[in-house]
Image (cartoon, rainbow, N blue to C red; front, side, top):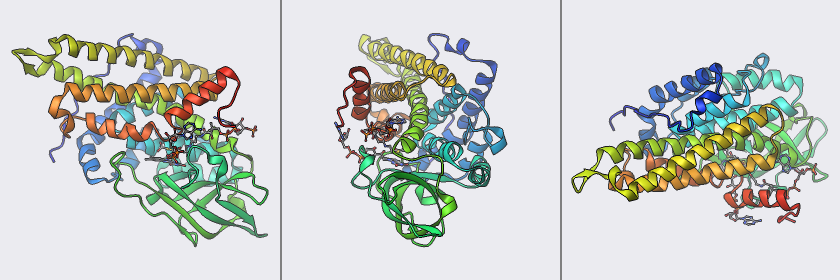
Length: 394
Ligand code: TGC
Ligand code: FAD
């Protein structure tokens, strides 16, 4: 497959660049340039082969995509939340699987170690995760407990000088090559705890999940724990209960809210260009009213989504973003991106189903993004709970 030239042009209908600082723009442009140079030329082939290109790890670390908001003393980039969002936007513009890898490393592995770990754990793991020397994964979902993680069966038993870990997690991004896993398990009192499991511990295996039609450039697998002896010092000491993993999800969902807008913008950009170039009935298809309706609605929804995630970033910088506000943005961005991908596919006609254009790849990826980190309907119910005060889950 021939390498591609990336001609993406970022849509900014409401001049939102004016809301960004020079540092934000520099960070965003650096990520964008790296994606154009290192990701776009090979991402289609990686997806076709269902491979995660490991050479991306070094580049991701260099652009600050591993732990963007983790303080520099632990190897992170020490940036604000809008910078984190912009990096995720650019990565997902390239591919949702690429953004997944960075989301998991930053929000689901480094964040809990930084927020709930001991000083020794922070020093041991964070610099290596920031540099990409070690890759991490996050084990919450189980075969019988997806939307309802409170029911998890994976458990730890206190054996004096170590914990004995048993159970299984599934649908775990990065698990097939992760060096460390942040795993959520119940203790003998049924309280959910976080524990760091390292590759090589006896009884710990990470079988890969094959046959995915979605997120093919991201490795997904299981985590299987068969009487794994985990040293006591690997328990995250500063968190107990479901709010531990759900706090990590707040950070990852925020990144997805920005990221999915990147996928939406890539689909729009490609559809707009195609509509001006493709001639039918003697004129560009962009001249037909039905095509213009599609394009006009796409740029309207993109502009609304861009404003939403920017405002959420401001609130998050001020520590004022609520989990429910983050849920609303995750749900809206992914729904917007999926709708735009489907409309963009139509504008590309038959070419839309090929790897010549990024559309079908984004569309298939987004079918995972709309499900993971809380499904479309779970986020709707979180908003419903927030506005009524009545939980649909009890
Ligand atoms: P509920 O009784 O509502 O809450 C239990 C405790 O948690 C607290 N809490 C939160 N804390 C922080 N952030 C949040 N977003 C929180 N939501 C709830 C809550 O205050 C309570 O605390 P406390 O102190 O009173 O104990 O819990 P519930 O069992 O009724 O469940 C609520 C529900 C359904 C919303 C929750 O379980 C949920 O969000 N389910 C979706 C599961 C999910 O998102 N899984 C994602 C797995 S990881 C993943 O998909 C990674 S993909 C990565 C990639 O590749 O990019
Ligand atoms: P289910 O919970 O079985 O839901 C099935 C359907 O039922 C959904 O439509 C859902 O909305 C609906 N439903 C469920 N409960 C309700 C309700 N109360 N009211 C109304 N409708 C409801 N997990 C991790 O822990 N770590 C990872 O790294 C990770 N990576 C992933 C990567 C990929 C590619 C995928 C696909 C998933 C990943 N996940 C990961 C798991 C993901 O978070 C779950 O798939 C997701 O939370 C949904 O769980 P489920 O698939 O078991 O669906």
